[in-house]
Image (cartoon, rainbow, N blue to C red):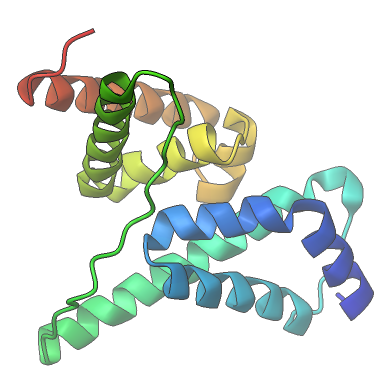
Length: 174
C-alpha cells in the first residue's frame, strides 16, 4: 500500500478509526498512538487495496488486532512488574438541554453506561463499540473480529442484556 492510498483512507474514514481507537483505549494519548500505528502498519504492509472489498473493515480489524496485541503485551509486563496508572481521564459526552436536571441525569447515565461497557468482557465490549459508536454493520464486525455474523448478533444481544441488567441493579429504570 502506498502513501497516497493510505492518505485517501485517512481522508475517507480516518475519523471513524480514531473514534474506534478512542473507545478501545479510553485514554486519548493511547488512542492516538493506536491510530498512528494502524495507518503506519498499513503503510508498511505490502497489501493491494481493493475499494470494493470494504477497506474500512480492514483498518478496523488492523486497529483491533494491534490493540489486542498491546493488551497482551501489557498483561505480560504487569505480571512481571506491576504498575498503576494514576491518570483516569475518560471521554465524557455532554448533551446540551434546557432542563439542567435532565441534562445532568442524562450525562450521569451515559457515564454509567460507558463504565459498564468498559467492565464487560472483551467479546461483548468490542462488538458493542463497533456497532453503536462506529456505525459498523454486523457483517463488517464479523469480518473485523473474525467470527460469524450470528455470533456477533448474539454477543450484541447479550451485551445489551448485561448493560440493561447492570443499569437496573444500579437503580436506573426505563
